[in-house]
Image 1 (tube, rainbow, N blue to C red):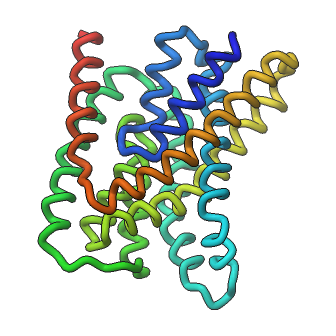
Image 2: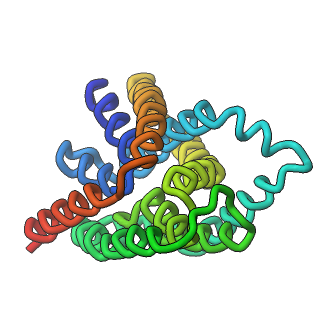
Length: 257
C-alpha cells in the first residue's frame, strides 16, 4: 500500500469525522474503492485514523479540556454523562456492529434514513430559544444520540449536533460540545483497536509507517475541519450535508442492487 493512500485516507477521516456525513461510512467506501483488506488492515487502520482526529480534537480544544479538569467545572460531569450511553452500547454490541453493519447497503440506508432527523433538528431548532451552555439533562439527551453513531452512516457529529439543536443549543455550541464529547469515545475505542492490532500482528515497518502517516494526515485535516466547520455553523445550516447524504446513500443502494 502506498503512502499516498495513507494521506488520502487521513484526509477522508479528518474531513468526515467532523462533518455530519459519517467518517466510518466514508472509510468503508474508501477501502472498497482501493481494495484495502478489512481483515488485514481495515478495522485497525480505521482505528489509527481515529487517533489522528483525536489529536485534532485535543489540540483544538486544549484550553477547554484544561478547564474541564478543574474540580469546580461541571462540564466534566456533563462529558462523562454524555459519553456513557455510547460507551456502554459500544462494549455490548461492538463485535456485531463491526462485522455485520459494515456493508454498503447498510451504510446507504443509514445515510438516507437519518437525514430527515437532521432536517427536523434544523426546523425545530429555529422555533425555540437558543441556549449557549449545556445542561445535565441535555448531556444525557445528546449522549443517547451519540450512541446511534455506532451504526455506520449515522455520523457522530450529525447525531450529536442534531441532538443539540433539538435541545435548543446554538449550532456552533452544539458542534463544540459534540466534538469535545467525541474525545473520550475516540480515545477508548481507537486506542483499544490500535493496540489490539499491534499486539496480535507483527506489523512490518512499512505497514507501521503507513499507519503513522495516516494518523498525521487525519490530525491535520481534522484540525482544519473543526476550525472552519464551527465557523460555518455560526451562520449556515446542515441542509447541504443532508442533500449530500441522500445522494451518496442512493448511489450506494443503486450499486448494491
